[in-house]
Length: 205
Image (cartoon, rainbow, N blue to C red; front, side, top):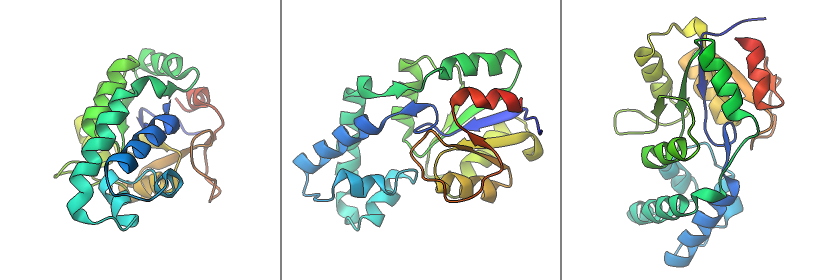
């Protein structure tokens, strides 16, 4: 069994269950904008950067900024609707104690990501969200930047995600992928490593 020195986590569907929060934020978007797409239509593309989801939904670019601001503001307002998956901080403390390097690579914007990390006291120092210089999933930019900052070799690292786009991101970054089966995705592939619960990751350190 391979052991890893660096574990990169996705956020939604891996460390946190934010589906109710996202549903409320999207419904707010529908109330204050002209968007007619349902939350289920939005959620089909979860894992991609927010603007990419809007493009997939065929929402015009001129509306993107207002939609994203509305969604982000209401998501932060309803932060208490987000739940940390059971034993996540327990697992992260074990990884930290064993000197495993960790970071978060997510499609969620940086402001909300940092608010969530602070709110739940998640013991992870570095997080990477899409920026002008770091393309979102499935591009490998954020993982490559994380490995650079952590001074890690790709052979020592893995990416834990729950969506097929996470698998493609890890593949593009040329690092191992671990599938979180308890998250939002539907198993589309026979992944080499599957976590049934967050604490299963401890077997791989």
